[in-house]
Image 1: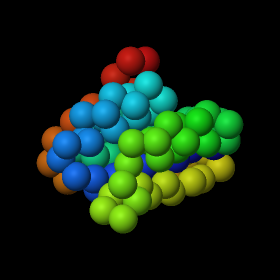
Image 2 (image 1 turned 90 degrees about the vertical axis):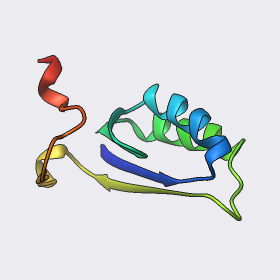
Image 3 (image 1 turned 135 degrees about the vertical axis):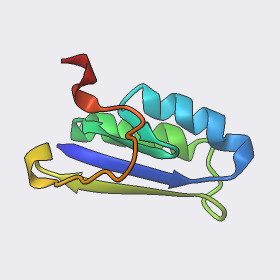
Image 4 (image 1 turned 180 degrees about the horizontal axis):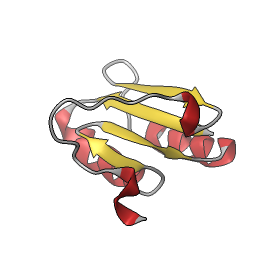
Length: 87
């Protein structure tokens, strides 16, 4: 599946979340990641995140799609990291 993951967490946990998400997805913007991931790997990522997040203060949003082709992305300005940069 293709996902967009967005988080809004307190500053003292941002470094941990950034490092964790980079192991699974592509970093495209501050606190925003995207990419192909299996359901099992996504659950693994979220379980690891839940271990250090404060669910009363923090939030993680995951938008799921069957494939990237069902997601239209429009960028205004400079994109931090294009996914096709490695092709």
